[in-house]
Image (cartoon, rainbow, N blue to C red; front, side, top):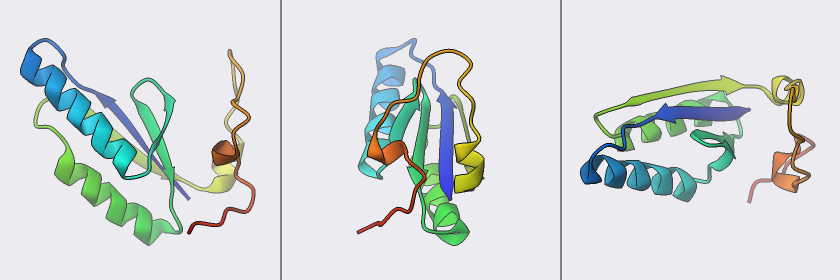
Length: 101
């Protein structure tokens, strides 16, 4: 199960940019990895843990901007097609059996 978070946050003022950086740092501290700019994903053990994590993300979200999330299974993640660009050969991007410690 993967939780994917997409966001579009304002960066017009210094306060907005600080909110953007803080939100991004908090996502990384929660174990999210960047798929591409403003799109982050994290492996979750099951749907219940993904929903719990989604609530944590909602609690740390800045007030302004747009933040969306969705959950997909490992099979659905495997079916992602690359129209341009190449997948990164990183063990963290693999959907093979994963052991979370």
